[in-house]
Length: 100
Image (cartoon, rainbow, N blue to C red; front, side, top):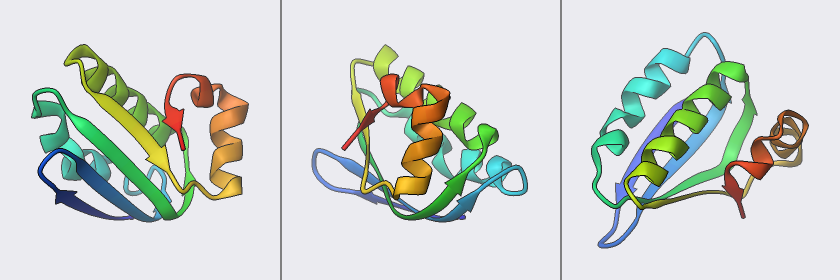
């Protein structure tokens, strides 16, 4: 999983590339750790090139969503491939995390 974080004036865009699974979930969590510290965050996770997420990845997305919400911010996931969206739908995460 490759992660690129781009900050604009008002938004943080996180580009996700590859598979998020148990082999790289810890590194992914380290990569996005600064996002947990932002005040009033506005985060978009661009999933155009994300191929898969395991339950470990879902856990990290949920932790980020909770952190963002507790600080009055917003988080969306965009450009999700159908096979990844299906994982979110089956697990109910589509009802917790806003998906564009």
